[in-house]
Image (cartoon, rainbow, N blue to C red; front, side, top):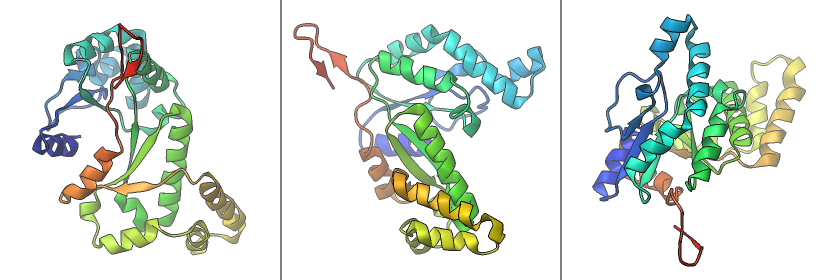
Length: 241
């Protein structure tokens, strides 16, 4: 979020960031809205004696019950702004818990044209099984949220070579299947092949590299995101960006 914010500032574009992670502790970017003003994970865990996962689910369900807070926060930002929602990183919230989907539908009702950005740590490309698992989690989130997705490999500046990353991302599914066979019990070969075939048939998961040192990678990601708010003209009824 901070990388996108700083890059937008250099282009004289304003991006407002709303934090929807009740477990966040500190920010390196200015916060236009913070769910912790409504509810925080520490308070929930202390008062209700819940663990981190249960407490996080409670917080997101509490947000759904108090969506008027989110609407008021966004009203203060203004109708013509780019808004970045910094969401919790726990993958279980997206395919298994309906709260995030309910927040998405409320934002759409308010007139936001939403794009979901799914981040996968670039270190996953060093381990083929982990990468395939990450792709399946991405697919699960995409089908649950039903939003256009921009899938991003983060922390690419930590990779020893960008060339190896590009060759890996361009690999065909049958090549990934062959990589999975190495060091895997033969009992799982058919399963691995079926998973890779699923990735090939959907052809929906493509990743954009994000290198904080390379402004071009940041600009490419921003180019995938249109304006975030649409408004209906009171005179003619047409929807305008």
